[in-house]
Image (cartoon, rainbow, N blue to C red):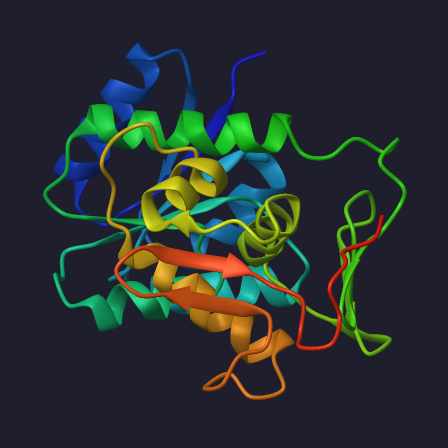
Length: 238
């Protein structure tokens, strides 16, 4: 079956360009032109992924993201923004977007990112992986996509969970930003590694006692990050 992509952009020329290229790549495509129309389209079209512009009439892209996530809808979202400011990109990620692209962009790069997201979904941990991973006071249940810290459940976005799981599977190893971009986002090209830093920061805010003085996710200057056992605990158990 063809994957369904919902395009949300109020610029007809942009929508038509994306629609043409996605159909050429074998996707089924539906377009809407304002934020409020997304929610009817979710029910009728049931997209596998949304390409969502930031600046929209009636309800902007950030509001759409927030509402979808608050409803428990985890459909992947690629946010489009005409702004170069990193603050706008971070805002999109903060509100539940899985990725962002800055206009103007290559349709082929958009298609590559859509394929990357679909590959990640298809390779999520199977239900046979039932044993939790623990490091310090953190427990990660891959099959249930649940994380607890000191026994208390922690709410992570899908991408934050995938990042933590990837770090757990490579515990103790120094991972470059490019390795994380490839392993978690499945980018096979030179991507914007700032997306990694944003997600690391958000993850620290949720799992560390003090995000400014982390015990688990350590920065390795000029290289990347590694997940470590807090002082006094040296093993990660399954």
